[in-house]
Length: 213
Image (cartoon, one colour):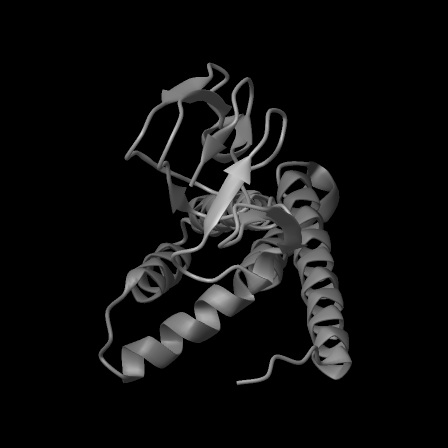
């Protein structure tokens, strides 16, 4: 099977990322606006328009929640969005306007924090995946060392990891011992001692010894 890089796909991913960023910015602007309106409801400047202010807070910050919740109600699908929607509507109908706004604002804040945590997690995973050597030192049948592209290394071939080099592939130690720096993979600052017949991960760095895989 041939592997080809699709520039069009990369372009599509870029467009998707730009769209997501725009949506996030829009949601943040609406959320901040709703918080400002909510604060204003406690001031006398709104007068008889406080109820309208509360309604705007719910619409601006929780329109997606309300729409999804109402859809789920008709589907008899009582998920988190559905229950939150029922709570907001019930509080508003009962005249507990500040409480209904707080429910939406806190729920939306929780979603923002969750999205941020997921983004950070995905970014960390992506950085780990990108940590890899481009070449490997292969030992051929005549015991000569050849430097080849990592993608050309076949299963069962022997490679040598020299001091200071990164482990190019997940492999098993055949001969030698060494201390490995795995901080980029595990976050652990202390070197890990490895010996023969142990499996090691690509992205690790050999600190002090030459060994065969």
